[in-house]
Amino acid sequence: MDKFRLSFEETMKKIIIFFLILFFSGVSGTPLGAQDIQNVKNLFLELGDPKTTNAAAERILSLSAKDPAARNYAVDKLPEMIEKTTFDQVWRNAVRLAGKLKAASTAPSLM
Image (cartoon, rainbow, N blue to C red; front, side, top):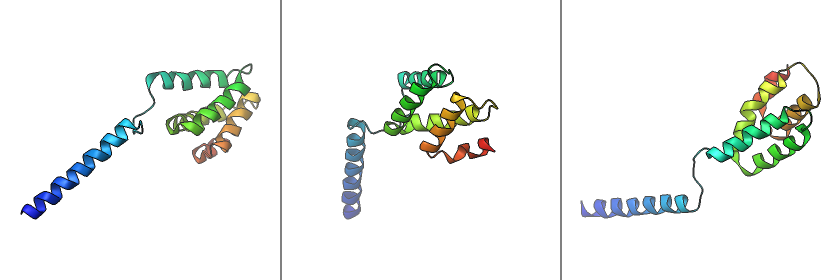
């Protein structure tokens, strides 16, 4: 029984150390913070505006490359923009972003 207990205690120590390292390194499975969510939402408003769509598309692409949660948000929102029937610069940017983000879930929106 002592052999099992030592093994269990050592295992628990390793698990605790792992989570402490994970916590203090900033790598957590938490979703976007409130400020980050607002930034991505604002970028999508800009993406929908013909005057700011090009710059917003580049910023969304850049942010998505750095932050998986931002990419997930973009992938979730792009189908709505692609489904509209106006084939303007906003639509082209949404389609281009979907391709660059390799967002397979947006494919049905193109049909």
